[in-house]
Length: 241
Image 1 (tube, rainbow, N blue to C red):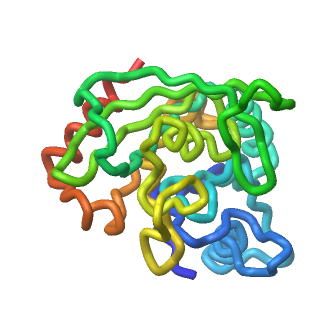
Image 2: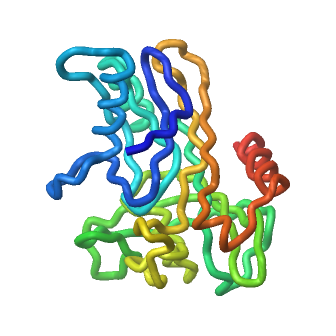
């Protein structure tokens, strides 16, 4: 498995996950990104025996983008606490069809009550149990005659949250058959949802470190993402509060 390294030091390693790749191995036995990163560390640094590589967050198999792993147990504990405390900044881009108008360049807040079913989440009704509140913000940063590109910021961290909430709006992610759109978006089973940005506090340096991930072809071939749009996304992220 080819790995695109965004950043690495003695404590963390940030990589780009491709769509269709498992973050962590499941019962299928298919190789995962975690396995590949562990093998990379073992080979590059000629480490004998088992190599530590700590999983501190995940991306769905169908989703691509930036993901960070811990290289020490201390870093893993601190990063896990940081993700649990929601002090990290995570930004995604999502491509949706123009099924309803979305005013551009304005942040909108969205809150839904979600219930988890087998394999997916959906908007709760009056009979639902185990309801969890899900909140996010989104802004339309580009559009053409068919699609809109949304920049999405998570305020909570529910399973399939972006996918479920955009579907509840009537604008499911392009390629996401689980949530009501014809799919998949590419041969790897990817959908048009991509983790474009991640900012954490470095577990030992105690200073912010940020990672950007390039927007994949399955999105840009449907809505051309030029330098101006890329800069607009970067500026919106930097200005976000």
